[in-house]
Length: 270
Image 1 (spheres, rainbow, N blue to C red):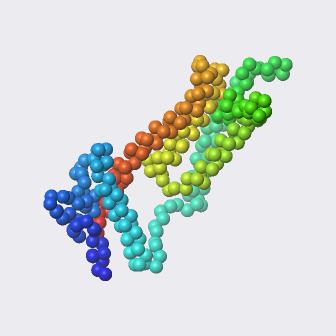
Image 2: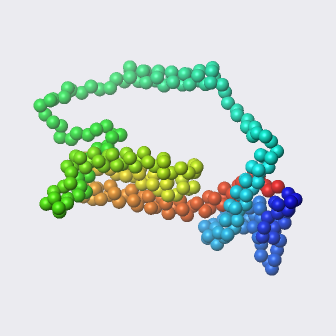
Image 3: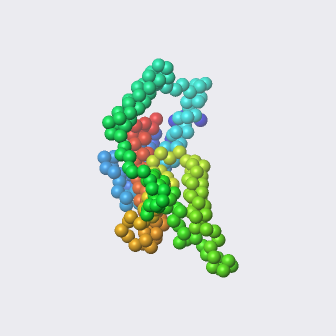
């Protein structure tokens, strides 16, 4: 079969990229034209009204990629890739050593000129009123204060299934386990949040939960009703995740359209 005929697009489009007209209707061109003027970004309403054009453009994008890959494999026995880089020795080793030495020198300089203040020794006979860990462990300390949601079972006479401290430890194990499973569940190749709205929403919800549960850990220092603060700990992450998903889902169609149109501008169809 002739290669020209094999690459001839469907839908009345000529090989020159000019759409054929039938009763005044204009088909989608392979170069991304025929939908909106090339010098103007389509509005949200225009994109929603032309979902067929977006699907057609996406289909042609993948078909062109597949065809070029087949042609490349037929023309050569191997794929030659030009890798521009510097050798590990001595270029990379010397450069990394210089950078590491600079930052180590800055740390030694600051520790010598601005030594940390050492307070009075701790009194073993008195316990501080507020005991807090380092700030980056507030989220874990906040999970130890989830005793209001520790279930009380009627079959146990209204007693709790486990102690509040044990419940907090189990909550830490569950949260860390979920974080460890996310890379195995999301195996996509997306690099931008708009390409994966769901997982982007999960990430935003997780960050908000870490922030709100950290505030819960220092609720004694926050001028807010403890009950309201406890409710916001779980409501804010859910609301943030839903809003993120809705916004990215709305932006995704326009993003894919602009991506495909940019591809055809840089690499016009043969």
